[in-house]
Length: 390
Image 1: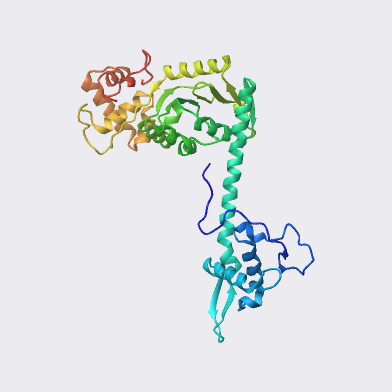
Image 2: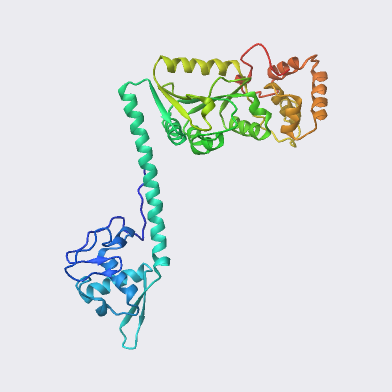
């Protein structure tokens, strides 16, 4: 967050009090009495000038006053007070009405209604500044660790790990590689939140996203739908039976992984690994699982859309074959597509008869080779010579 905080109706920087101004939280102090520094001109932090602060405080206690009545040693002459009153009226902090003597009399607006929005604006600005300071501190820590040549950093606590995770991805320029075992508890950040906060931006910047997920992800309809949506957006997702650990690697220069995965839900601790032999080993671990897995293919069709055209395969059948391709059971396919178990079995049997396949392995292989799954993407072909579709 680097944009400048501004507000057309609020001055951004408080101005020091003029000599002679003596104010307390309740109004002007008697001359010669030193004000408490913590109370003097507090309203200047909301954008008021010191004179406007002083006049407004007086007006709160003296409704329907004319400028001359508010002029004293703390506010200056009546002309200065009149100018300050005009500013207060313009900003909604006071109202003016002519009296019988044709002289304008002023009344302070409710402090809650008039100053409340300014106070909330300052609170929001401070929260943004606090977030910026936290981000800068994390960037400083990361840069210092990298400059020192330390191969590994230990990050304790979900907040620290989350900040480093988002920072690493935000600084990516080439690719982000992720291994994601299925976990019931997300102590740091959920897959959906990470996508919303950073991954969508990375794809628009042209950063490649490659992931390896466990097949159990696809046993759950909502997770399967999420994975398919990410694949449709351009992420490369490989599906394997099991993963040893959660891992993210950015540009092959830094990796992040849990120190003790079994403690992630109570006391998460992570290791940030810099460009060393250990990072090379972690990159090799990712590549081995990515190549061994089966590519998740977005169906890209509506179940009610009918025939897909070039493949000659019904849209629903194409979805069924796509899910069979990555190893889902008939029951899991039925749950995800919202149809009966027997309906899925009947459609699969019909497809096997149509192509002359004796087993589901043969049906899956025929689907991949015949372009049923994605006839425009050569990378959709399995990376190994055996299938888990059966």
